[in-house]
Length: 212
Length: 227
Picture 1 (spheres, each protein chain N blue to C red):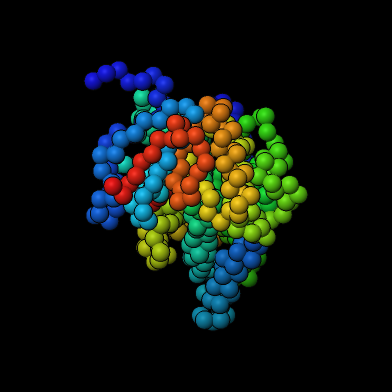
Picture 2: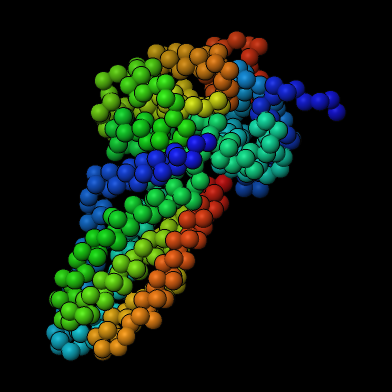
């Protein structure tokens, strides 16, 4: 075996996922470097969300391992988690807190980025003026934007996004694409599943298709 | 990771849960009302004889406290699980067991503490003496945090299940029984003029055990439930 490429940060080796006695995928391997996107494709029920939950350290792979800097992420535990930010298919937004309170909580819970405050994060997703509105009063698309604003308030190298474009309008989609491009240009990394075609440079994309 | 940020995450979670509880005041009031109602119904059921009520009073108050605690447990993780914030908490770079301690503390402040405040009134109502009410309060101070800590382990194990309530009671109630025995025993003993230091020491030991072990157990149970 040749020496691994030192630039590779996130690597999955021979991952297998079994759910309710059904094998969703097996022997899946991939490697991701800074400024790259891992795009997970596949039909419904092919295990996209399960794979994302494995990468975020919530679900254990049934076989195989996931490494960050050549260390197993389940052994790194908190040292891995300070590098990641996750927006799943549930927004993770508390409906009875205001937009501002939601962001402050996310910030304090994670690894806060001192360079950006809540207002700037909300500005970035075009939610200016909604700081003190309860999340319950926001539309589904706005709640999604609020969830995505959470990515900005913490210093996370790896973003893990599950169908980030769900319930977003055309403007929302272009906002998210802009956030993603900025993140990648700052050596950030991204793992996402999406049905929507993303306008990113093809050379930065690593594709996995779970349906094959 | 900067360790100074752990207290900040702890207090952010505590503050968030207290804010949410304050915005859902009816949810706090529900177990409390249940506690008061059960205690108030007993004299109607067994007759108003003060001697009998004084005899069974400590037991009634403690059984009502156990059931009220059980009733309030489901809310510990339910809404966080449903809206996805539980995943966010689990992905925090801070130790999950400490964050869970913050959640349990918030649960106790919103469910255990209100019981402590109304318990003396209910004690008077059932004809307990001053010494007995004092002991009742002491046992509630030591005992109700144990109910929150141990109960949260059960909730963490059942949070992913659709009808976890039934299993939760079966899991958690047997673990509550020592607390019930020592607490009600202490109040009865103090009424009879006996020393209660033995009971209180055992309760304190249980509390220390629960504080030291259950946060880790809650964290592991959650990891299993969400896997």
